[in-house]
Amino acid sequence: MSRQSSTPGPRRGVTIASRSVTRSSPQAPERQPSKLKRVATASAGAARIRRSTLFDENWDGNSDEDEPEDPEVRAKKDKIMKIMEDFVGENAGKPAAKIASVKLLASMGEEAVHCLQTAMGDSDWEVRQAAAQCIPGMAPRAAVACIPALVGMFGDPIWSVGRAASAAFKDLGQAALPYAEMVAARLGDRERHVRLVALRLVADLGLEQYLEQVLEMAEDGDPGIRMEVLRALQILDPTGTEHPEPVVEALHDEHPDVRQQALATMASWGPSVVEHAEDVAEALADPAPEVRKAAMALMREMGEATVQCAEDLVQALVDPEWDVRSSALQAMSRFPPEALAGVLPAIGGMLSDPRRYVRQAALHLLAQAGELPGEVLGLAGSCRGSC
Image (cartoon, rainbow, N blue to C red):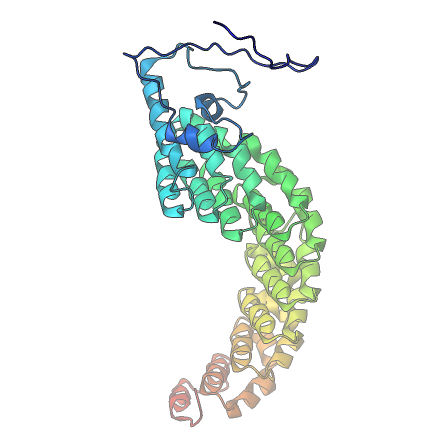
C-alpha cells in the first residue's frame, strides 16, 4: 500500500534537480562511492566532489555518470581520481604524500591540469611549491594552461613559493611570453616581494617593452627594489646609452648597497662608461668603504680616461683602506708619461706606506716613470710590514 508523502513541494524560485530512485537488485550489489566522494560529502551541506569537478571548471552540478567517454580517457581520469584522494583522505595532512601525488599529476597531461591547479592552492606551502616546480616539466599545452595560476602565486605569503612560481614561469620560455602583460601588471603590486619577483622576470625575459615601468620603480621606497632596478637595467639597457640618468643618480642614494650596485651597473656599460668618469671619481670619497672600492675598481678599467680624475686619485692615496690606495696607484699606471710626471711626488710618498702591497705598487709605478732602476723592485719583497 503506497503512502503519500507529507513533504511539502518546492517553493517558487527554487529549482531542485530530479533524482530517479530504483531498488537495487539482490544480484547487483549497490555501487559504493569512492573514498574521495565519501570524505567530501561526509558533512551536511558539503559540496559533492565528483569527477566533473576535477576535470571541468565549468561543471554545473549535474550528474555525469552516463556521459559517453573514451575508455582510455576515462581510465586516465580514474587514475587521477585515485591520486586526488591524497588531498582529502587520510593523507590530507601529510605533505610528503601530497607532493608525491603532485608529481604524478604533472605527468598525466591535460586531464590533470585542473587537479594540479588545486594543488597550487593547497594549504601546505611545500605542496604549493612542489606544484609550481612541476609545471615546466608538463606537456606544453598543459603547462601553458597553468600559467595564470603561476602568476597568481607570485603573491604567496611564503617567499620561496613565489620564487618557485617565477622560476617556473621563466623556465617556460617562449611559451610564457604571451602572458608577459600579467607579469608587468605586478610591477606595481603593493607587496614588496611581488614587485621584486615581477621585476626580475621582466629583466630575465628581456621584456624591453616594459622599460618605462621599470624606470619608474627607481624611486621605490625599498632599497632592495631600487637595487633590482639597477640590475634590470644591466639587461634592458646594457650600454647605458639610453637611460644612464637613473644609474648616475643612484650614486647619491641614501643606501650604500644601492650606490655600490649603481657602480656595478656602470661597470657593465663597457667603453661608454668613460663619459661618466667624473661621476665615478666622486664616489671615491664615499663614506662607505665598499663603495669606494667599487669606484676604484671601475676607475682602473677606464684607461687614460682616468687622467681627468687625477686629483681624485691622489686623494685616494690617503684612503684608510689599503686596497683602495693600491688600486689608485694601479689606475695611475694608465696615465700617459706627461700626466704621470705630475703625480710623482704623491707616488713617492707611498714608499713609506705600512702595507707591502702598496709599497710594491708605488715602486713599480716609479720604475715605469723612469725614476728608479728596475732592480730596486727587489727591495719591495724585503720591506718590513704587514701584507
